[in-house]
Image (cartoon, rainbow, N blue to C red; front, side, top):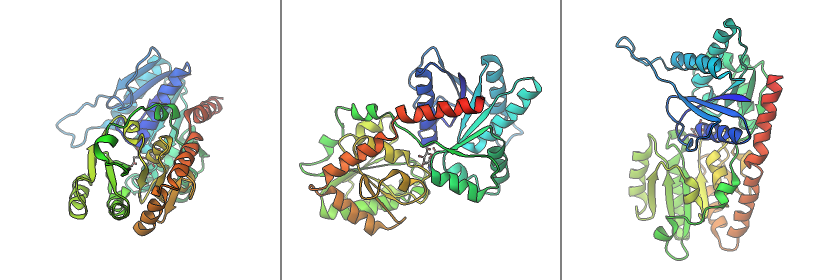
Amino acid sequence: MKIGIVCYPTFGGSGVVATELGKALSETGNTVHFISYAQPARLNVFSDNLFYHEVSIKNYPLFDYPPYETSLTSKLVEIVEFEKLDIIHVHYAIPHASSALLAKEILKDMGKNIPVITTLHGTDITLVGKDPSCKPVINYSINKSDGVTAVSNSLKNETVSIFNISNEIDVIPNFIDINKYQNVKRNPYRGKLCGKGERLIVHTSNFRKVKRIQDVINIFCKINKEIPSKLIMIGDGPERANIESLTRSLCSLKDVVFIGKIPDVENVLHNADLFLLTSEKESFGLSALEAMASSVPVISSNAGGLPELVQDGVSGYTCDIGDVNAMSEKAIEILDKKNINLFKNNAFKTASKYDISIILPKYIEFYKKILN
Ligand code: GMT
């Protein structure tokens, strides 16, 4: 198959999933064309059947806002026509789905039928998508796509409850390449940061309000009073300065390190003891899956799809959103030396169910169903 993948090029979950999917599809003999405004962060390999096309945006003094959607639509028309694509798969509905559907209409006038698949990732529905400034366009795009997938049952249900949906939505969960996480040899931070017997806790996010990162810091302070620990904060975003200042006021900065955005989370997760994800909304929680693939148990909120991913009491615990006390108590339970190894093993077993070898065939099957 010749597949066009449209995604955000950033470190966000939807871009990561789209990029890893494209790489895996190309390794199984398909030709994949990535279309985005910058090279996707995880697109670090190239081969003769993997391509990247940059959407360049024509600006003009009249425009207060560069017309990205128009440029993306035109690029899609060009790539479908000249690369003879069989299918377009867009990740994150805004604005990718409506651009792809307009490209489909343009191509129809040119005598070419191109199926469009839209994968919903989370905030394109639960936060931004339902805003009146986007809602009718997202509703239309979901109903007019040739195929729609959501990354969890929770996201599918939320989509159906928010919008007026007449199209079928299939659930295909996110995935990881388990080997990548298991083959890490050394965590470069663990030895430098942690004293003997100290636990290592990790959080990863895009530092947005929706992640409730203040809860991560509060939970860590409570844990650290009972069990000497260190916390590594991975990622960056609008809340980072506030969170760093909260950290300074609540605990010692020698116990918490902010390392910013990194391309190789697996190296930091390796040999960590606990992952914290306290989000108010989380359609799936790819970062929690990456942690479990590294044999790291998870304490998370019970937002969105997290209870589908984190098996409560087995691979970690899910607690009510904002319940810092319950999350700290459960964290201390997991970190106890008589429990930790069981939770670590279970976390890995849970993650194994989401290995790419299991999820990739579901996408290929879905493409074939749409193409037929
Ligand atoms: O976490 C974010 O805000 C980024 C966002 C994205 O689109 O990149 O993540 C969403 O998609 C990920 C991949 O499917 C999911 O694992 C995240 O749970 C989801 N984020 C939210 O729902 C807040």
